[in-house]
Amino acid sequence: MSGETIEKFLGSVGKSTANNYRRGLTLFTQWYGKDIETILAERKDDLTPRASESLIDAKQRAQRFEKLIEEFHKWLGTKQPDREAYPINTCRTYCLGILQIFRYYNMGLTLRAQSPINVTVLSVGDFVLMPEHVRAMFHVAKDLRSKLLVSMANDLGWRIGDVLSIQKSELPNLEQQAPIVWIRITAKEKQVAKTCLSETTVQLLKEYLFAFPSKNPYLFNSNGHGHIDDNTVNDRLRDLARESNIDISNMKLTFHCFRDMVISQAKNLSIDEDVINSLSDMEIPIWYLTIFVYISV
Image 1 (cartoon, rainbow, N blue to C red):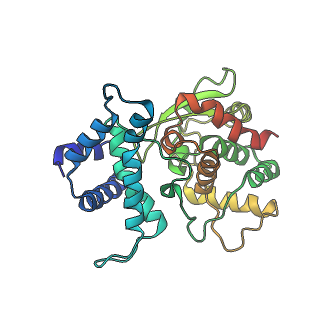
Image 2 (image 1 turned 60 degrees about the horizontal axis):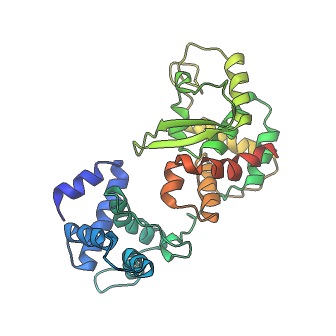
C-alpha cells in the first residue's frame, strides 16, 4: 500500500480506529490483489461520467465496489487455509477501512440497507437498553444530576469520556429555542460531532447550573478540581435501573449502552452509518424525532 496515501487517511482518526482500518485495508488489498492507489483509481473511474451512458449503467458502475466489498466480507467470514473465519463484528470492522478511505477521498458509497456488512451482533453481557428503560430511569431519578445525566446521554449518544469532559464554558447559549444545535470535537476520534440538546435537557441544565454554582470548570464536577469518574456514573445508572424495577440480571449496564441504543435506533431507520457517527446538519430533524421524544412522551 502507498504509505503516504494510507497514512494521511489513518492520521484523520484515533489510534485504535486507525489500527482496525489498517488491518482491514491490508486484508482487502491482499484479497483483491491490487494496491490502494490502483483501487482508488478504479473507484474514481467508476464514478466518472461516460459520454452517452445511460443513468442505469452509470449507477450500476458506481455501485461496483459495493458488490466487491460484500464478497470480501463473505471471504472474511469463511475459514481459509491460513486462518479461522472471523466473527461477524470483526468482518464488519475490517470492511470499514476500505469504505472510509473511499469517503475520505470524496468517493464514498452508501451500502444498501440489506447489505450483510451492516449485520452485527451485540457483545455478550451488554444490557440492551431500550427507550422505555430510559424513560423509566429518568422519571424515577430524584436528584437533578441523575436526571441531567440520563437526559444528556439520551440526547447525545456520546461516549462517557466526551460527556464527563464537558466544561460549563463549552455549553451553547441555553436561551435559544430548543432543540439547540451543539457542535463539539470528540476526544477519541478527534472528529466533529453535531447533535442537539432537547428542551428537557436545556431546562435541566438551567436548573442544574443555578442550583450548583461552582468554581470547578466541569459540568459534572467532583469535590476536587476534576470531574466525576466513570464508575460513579455507571453505579448510579445501575441504581436507577434497580429503582425502576428493570431486570438487568447479570448483564452490564453502563453509560455506553445509551450510545448503543441511539445507534441501534438510527440503524433501524436505515440511516447511513457515517451520518449516524457525525450527526450532520441534514439529519438533525430525524435525530430529534427518533431520540428526544422518548423521555418527554
